[in-house]
Amino acid sequence: MAATGQNLSLEEKLQILSGAAKYDASCASSGSTRQGDGVGAAHKSGICHSWSADGRCISLLKVLFSNNCRYDCAYCVNRRSNDHRRASFTPAELAQLCIDFYRRNYIEGLFLSSAVFSNPDDSMQPLLETLRLLRGEHRFHGYIHLKVIPGCSPELLAEAARLADRMSANIELPSRQSLLQLAPEKDEGQILQVFHQVHQLTGDRKLPAKSQKKHAINPAGMSTQMIVGATPESDLCILQRADLLYRGPGLKRVYYSAYIPVNVDHRLPALAGAPPLLREHRLYQADWLLRFYQFRVEEILDPGQPQLDSDLDPKAAWALRHLEHFPLDVNRASKEELLRIPGVGMRSVQRILTARRQTRLQAEDLKRLGIVMKRARYFLHDGRHYLGDVPQREDFIRRALTSETRKATSNQLSFNFNQPAETAASALTGEL
Image (cartoon, rainbow, N blue to C red):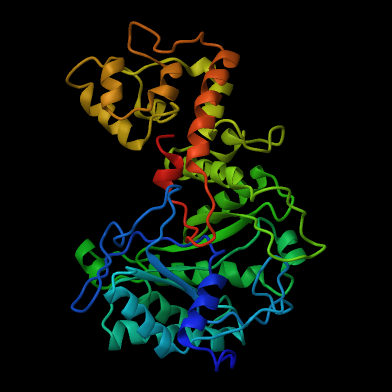
């Protein structure tokens, strides 16, 4: 274990190590069903959490076990060549800190990561000891997200899967070439192997639902993170990589993290202005289309148009390129067709399908069903009338949509280094 920070107070360690963890975006707090006698509870819909204005989860204690890293990744604030204060908790310190914060109602769960200060097994062991203390000695049943150290032994990974509610391993960058350029000491194969190993632990789980809750192994699944803007890959390349990861075993969620320059390094781009948060936002929206709306990557982007439209969400951009499919009759369109309408989300589609069995839907009915008519009206008619207020032409509709989108996006996007960087899908995507 790292021998740094031995003369620091617990408050100083917390200040250093919570600050060192703030750039990790793959922090989620949903999908757990852990229950039992003790303190804390991780319910089916996730822990009790608050959301900032841009949808970021702010209820977890998000901290590194140690920031004493053996790697020298160009983009990382904790790289070994940086002249920063180094610190490490002990497992007992961190477990007690988490329980104290929970009892004071500061947090409802823990997001635990660490720099790799030794070989993978030696770096993973104190993280697991922290979880053993929380689950065993303190009987803590709240939400725990553990960042796995790639390359650790299968035995340690299996124990982590039993103790944590969600695990993650960061792929870091969209291509192997970029990883070799900016983080040459990291092994992409080891990172991908984590997903395969966890899938082997959970992939053939066929117990009844109640038994799954009792014997759940990593119930919230695996996640990963890609940094956006530190390397020259296009949005198409990023989404193709995400799609490939989703098609492989063991991964539930990809998080996108706008590149923040924290180091001076010739391998890194010079960033003019704020981090590319709008690009991050559009990638989350496109990711949502891939996972829940049956879109394919090639429908969203192609080599002739490899970047997402900054003015429009990806579904609206697709709809404008395919006006031959619109306007759709809201009373006759299929579920699949309704899901392609901008401003109509998963829940709204179910409401439409239910409501139209009883009555013929009109514009005022759609508003009550939660459809975002500022976008949807340009792609709908009610069987009698087109619901838009501009001609059914791409230039007119784009002008109307972009004026609304700029207002909404400026209100949604903000940046605060003191908040955890998990982007809540419901807040970012709204009704796509």
